[in-house]
Image (cartoon, rainbow, N blue to C red; front, side, top):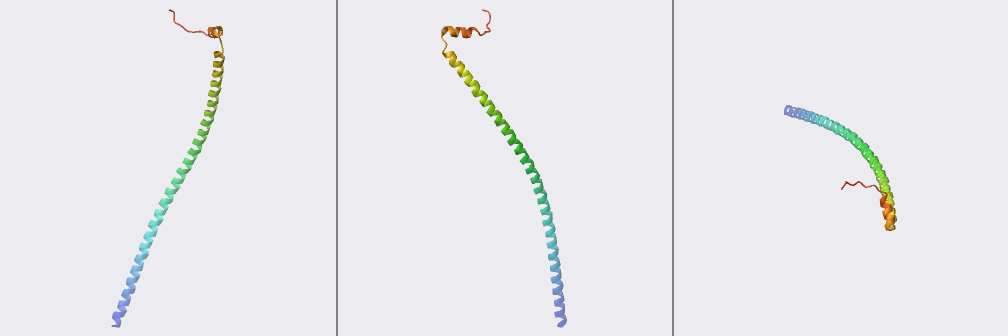
Length: 116
C-alpha cells in the first residue's frame, strides 16, 4: 500500500510538473505572439505618424496658399471698387451734359463702321 501511495504521489508530481511545463510553454508562445503583434502595431503607428506629419505640412502649405489667394482677392476687390467709382463719376459727369456737350463728347470717339 505504501508503494501505491508513493507511486501515486510521484505520478501526481510528474503530472503537475508536465501541466506546469505545458502552461509555461503556452504562456511563452502567447507572450511571443503578443510581442510580435505589438511590434506590428508600433510599425503601423510609426507609419501613421509619418503620414500625419506629411499631411500637417500639406495643410500648412494650403493655408499659406489660401492666405495668399485671400490677399489677391482683397486687392482685386479694391481695384473693382475703384473702377466702379471712376465709372460712376464719369457717368455722373455725362448725365450733367446738355445736347451740344454730349455731341462734342461723343464726336471725339472713332467708330468702326462698314461702308454703306
